[in-house]
Image (cartoon, rainbow, N blue to C red; front, side, top):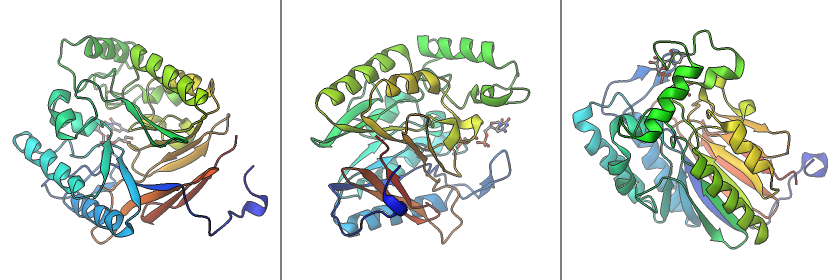
Length: 318
Ligand SMILES: Nc1ccn([C@@H]2O[C@H](COP(=O)(O)O)[C@@H](O)[C@H]2O)c(=O)n1
Ligand SMILES: O=P(O)(O)OC[C@H](O)CO
C-alpha cells in the first residue's frame, strides 16, 4: 500500500504542521542510566527542549505542539519537583503556540495529578484525556494512559485500588516494576505502566463515532504505546487490546503516537493503523537532539525528525 515505487509526491503544501517531543525527564542531577544500563542525560534534556522550541518558533508555521509525557524524572529530589515542573513548563511556554501535554509515569512520581494538570495547562483540571480539532478535517485525541494506575492518584482512590488489585493478579513479583517470570505480552503488567478506564473507553468510542460522522481523520496520542509491534513488551499499555478494539471499530484513526519506550519504534497494525513511538529527549548525549515536527497531508503524516528522532512517512492505508 502507499505510493507506487514507494515515492511520496514532493512539493505539495501540508494542511498544517505540529511539533513533537517526548520523555524530557529533566532533573538537576548528574547523568545516570536506566535499569538496563542505557545512559540518561538528566540535565541535557532541557537543552534539547530549548532547541526544539527554538526550532518550532523559527519554522513559523507550527500550529501547536504535542509533548508525549514525562517532563521531569522520578529521580528529581522531591523537594525540587515543583520547581522542576515549573521550569520545564516555562520552556514549553516559550513556544509561540499551544502545547498539548500528556501525563507520564515520571510526571506522577513528582507531583499528584491535582497539581500537575493546572501547571501543564491541560484543557480541563478534572481529567487528562481530551480531543481537539486544529482544522475541521482532522481530530486529535489525547489519551490518559495512567487513568487506572497505581501511581498519581490518592492511595484510597478507586483507580489506585483497581490498579493494585490488577497488578496483584497479573504480576506475582514483590517489586511490581519487575517483569521477572512474566512471559511474552504479560511483561506489560508493570507498575510503571497503566490502563484506560471504562469511562475513558466509552468517551473514546463516542469521540470516534463523532469523528466518523463528521468525516474527520484522527490521530490518537498516548504516553504509553498501543501496539506491541512498535514497542518493547515492558512498555505497552495494560489494556492496549481493549483500546485497539475500539479504535478498529472505525476507519477514522490513521496514526497513533506514543512515548515511554525511549528507543522509539514504528509498526503498522493488522488494520493498517500506523503506530509511531517517538525517541526520547532524555537519552540524547550533550550536543545531540531528539525532537521534530509533523507535516499533515490529506493522505499521510510526514515526521521530520531532528538528529536522534528518525524521520518517517506515515502514508494512510485506508
Ligand atoms: N527490565 C526491567 C526494567 C525495569 N525494572 C524496574 O523498573 C524500574 C524502572 O526502570 P527504568 O528503566 O526506568 O530504570 C527499575 O528501577 C526496576 O525496578 C525491572 O525490574 N526490570
Ligand atoms: O522512562 P521510564 O523509566 O518510565 O522507562 C520506561 C521504559 O520504557 C521501560 O521499558
